[in-house]
Amino acid sequence: MPAPKDLDPSSSPRALLGAELRHAREKKGLSQDALGLKLFVSGAFIGQLEAGTRRLRPDMAVMVDEVLETKGFFTRNCGAANKSRYPEHFAEAAEAEAEATAIRQYAQLLIPGLLQTPAYARAVCRAYQPTAPKEKIEEFVAARMERTRLLDDPTDPLLWAVIDEAALRRVTGGHEVMAEALRRIADLSRRGRVLVQVLPFGAGAHAAMEGSIKLMDFEDAPPLVYFEGVGTGRLDDDPATVRHLRFTYELLTACALSPQKSLALLEAMAQDYAHEEHP
Image 1: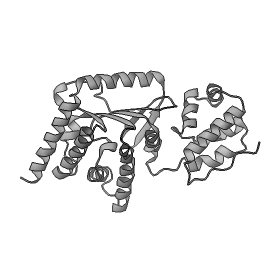
Image 2: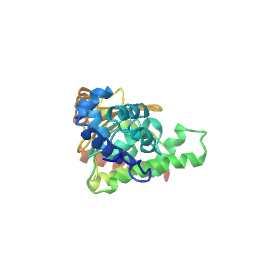
Image 3: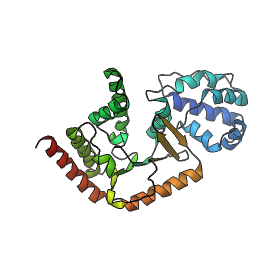
Image 4: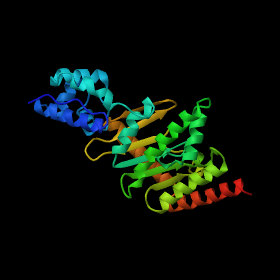
């Protein structure tokens, strides 16, 4: 059988690389667990590579070529598959997000990226990079708005967000920007496109006071959790970690306002912001 052709970077390179990995593994008669053992990773990670939800790193591509005897194919093509318009620490998470069937997120300090408006995203980016040229800021905003197109589909993926009241009270970009941002969330919630719960200050201490949570489920790959800090981020597929964070998220939903009460609060806050901008 002829060797696989080099990938065309203009066509879904991550999906193509995953399909080629599955083909090469099965040709060798290896299970995902068996290949993972040879590469010092879990079988679940191999499954995520094949499903296109994780990226093949250059050092691992070299090992894959050696184990599967693919004549440098994965080494040559992992660069094309890893190209991204997102920052390095977030690129893999953004690409996994696009393949997810369900996303559950607790946002502690800012409105989740998938729910942001251009003006809100612009204000966030300017705060992150106060000296950046306008063109760089607009590139960031365009990339973030591209992510929000996931919500153009009427049903998939499921997005369930618990937003801390602190994120809604922090005036980001001005009162008019906040009014628009909250109206967008309320509109998506009213249309049933997303589930949104507000975690009010009155809830007091809760299970996720140390940080945000982002859980992603997939149709044909194990679930992932994404951890993010200032300029850093990583995906984790450890089953025990995912179970713990899923339980933590469930505790948050129990402490938060119901979707109906959250919608009422969002609409009231949007109206308050609008009146403050135009007294």
